[in-house]
Length: 624
Image (cartoon, rainbow, N blue to C red; front, side):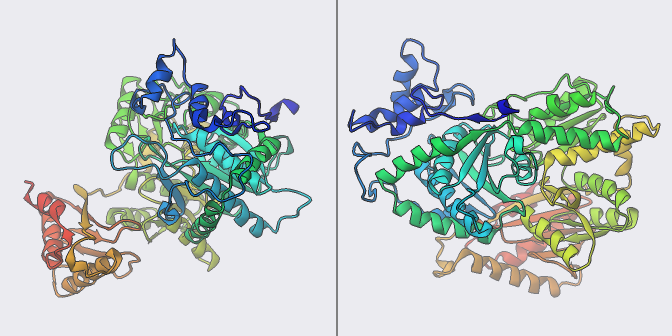
């Protein structure tokens, strides 16, 4: 088992070249920092007669770079020549508004230059400060014993900035006196699982985990998700970490940064944890099928990983279970995402997997988002199971195992889904606020007060099960689907993916379903110095009053977010975005004509707010 763990020795020719970025020996080569960024990236780029390096120094567009394994982008130097001697703070570091990096229970920012109007906010020093802050937060939570340093695992998806940020995270953790275990390319669910796995050979369990990802956002973005064995961190925790990071960043010294580099070399180890994670998924399917070695033998299943981190699923999960995976596509990690956005909600992405299923005459298609915490399915007839249909499928599977349980979803799920869960399946539908963490936390709360809930799932594809520690794990959701296929075959039921299709029979689906975004102009005089949130709340209050005076409309008796209204055979929900100056409007109806009637009801109420851009609604109302 000794080969599993690789102690990382920082040498001059290390793959990532991080030592060159900081290298300094007895004052030699005083001006190393000016050239260091080029040395750093030179190690990563294929070198052909100096052409790449010359192009690099000329500011080559990142769109023309090689794939993820070698594609990084130019950064300005951030360390001065007196790196080994200075003990003063670094005034030349960019001013950063750390609090703007919070995105609910995640941290997200721009990590790569090249997109107009999107300056880099997630630099290496910013990243190092955030990682140090998380380490301090974790040490307080765990009441760390100085004689036994805490361990933090670090993984990343396929983004082109991933490895550089991974090094910065490693330095930040090490500077706080904690040990670091790098996983390299990994999935978000695997990172959480590393806090639960008990296997000393793989240095598990770790005390905390950091996943470097920005989900399905464009190539220039990146961010962080944080975990302990209690689950993902909440908004308040993220705010606390960012507040700590501000102080850490402002107190950086050259000497301190050099020290963190040295500590990283001493405390860093690497482990192939994904072999543990995938092995557990395989075991779960085998167990559901009665401990059959290859319960999926004969099933043809194609996977679309969208060039994210989910390519492992075909080779490491499906093939050991006996499935045929020919026709699977975009399995190789490529942080430029050249084929389509890795997003089960994206129409282009879903079209790609449906085509793959039909062209290969497959029984099933599976698609993941970038970091594998979301997924969707396509049956043999190319019927898509995402959004409401995926929720219906997972509800049917879970309610077979736990009759009468409560299914918690976000606020934009359809009325037809409620009817399906409650009237067809005999469960209870609890519609809560938008945001996967809100949905999961609500399910946990319901269980704590005596209302049994086994599934929390959002329309975006984030789905969490009580049996899986309330982790939103796209791969585990697919395991539940595979379990259904395997157990049906073990029971003598044939028909491939038809067993899944039959589970959602009777689900009423709307003829029209749209989401329109009404933006709030924060510079408009009508805000009078107030916040967009206050303005949005005023819009919602007026709409609520308008609905109460209209006998054709009926406000939902129980609603946790925005204003939800039924009428004209459909419904609409106007809510305030969690993070942005936007009021999303969801409308579902049996026909376009009825959807327009609902849209008119909203438009007539909100026209009194001049700072609200209603052009999206106006365009919809004009569309025949």
